[in-house]
Image 1 (tube, rainbow, N blue to C red):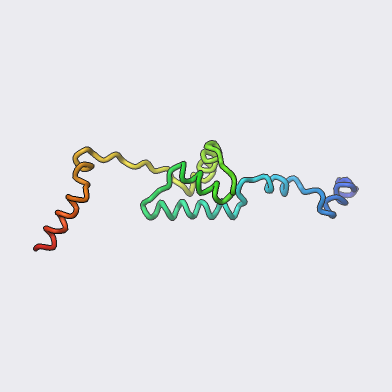
Image 2 (cartoon, rainbow, N blue to C red):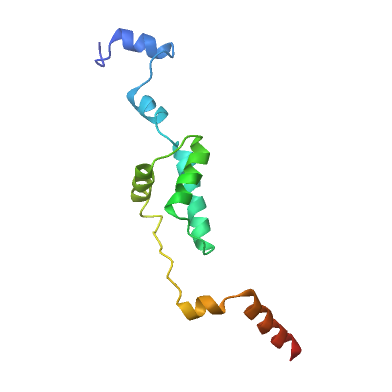
Length: 117
């Protein structure tokens, strides 16, 4: 009575049969705070190594952690919530000449020439 809490609520919570609103909300989260932190750190690590993950890769990472398929909208919300840590990067398209020059033969030819000197 002193704190405005129903006696039945206190009794059920003490017996573990009823959760607080915060505990219930946390239980319904796809990833717990520790898992989210680890996902953010992994994405940052990939990005530092020059391999920023795509949205599909983020969805796959999260699904593997949660053991449940995450939606495209979940990825959007996750990236928006963590925008201060994560930056979206787009890879630049390479021009046709560079793409055609990037072949096994051209690389072997280059290193053969380099080793012959």
